[in-house]
Length: 105
Picture (cartoon, rainbow, N blue to C red):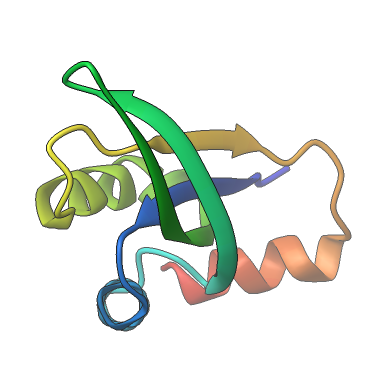
């Protein structure tokens, strides 16, 4: 059975998140991208505490395009140390699996 993966990343601005989303879809690296603008992040960077608004992107992709998608995000990300997490979706309806795999051929 073919698998679907969820890839998460955070970006500093909505305009950049939309640009990356469009490029990823045009390159067929993902079937769908969701944008969540309600992320507030707290973190230390170079010994300084930050509280930043960030944009979360959730990409749905196939195993075939997973590595290419991760590499594309890393290469085009504005952060020096971007968060990119990958999750295999354990259970999802067959029609959705088929659609994701068709969109990422």
